[in-house]
Amino acid sequence: MAQRTVLKVDLSCEKCKKKLLKAVSAVEGVDKIEVDAPKGTVSVTGNADPYKIIVSARKAAGRHTDVVSVGPPPPPPKPADAQKKAEEQKKKAEEEKKKKKAEEVIPVFHDPHACRECQRLVVVQLDRYDCYEPNPSCSIM
Image (cartoon, rainbow, N blue to C red; front, side):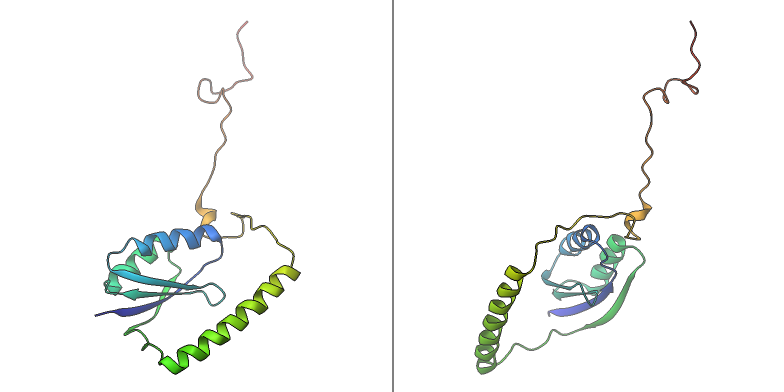
């Protein structure tokens, strides 16, 4: 039976979001994954075990994963409602296209100093003499 698992996750950067999606999609039985970045929620629908989804999300996102709900997925919409929603979605899509044309395209850069999860990585730069001699300023002539 299909279940819907909703998780609250810190999606502060694109790298964390991709890492989470990759981990959750690897769970067997996942049919659909919906991400709502402004709210910070991830909805997973499918026959997968909710426990496995939660564990894989916590491994990918760290300690910042909370379970919002686990239960049956919402019922499918009625045919009359589906037509109305389709028309509304078309109108919204046209409005969004107009807004996107008006807005300037801003590139997204990954800033490891802004993300708590990405701050865990530490890069140590070694000079070429560090591995050979403890003090490269000393030389024998």
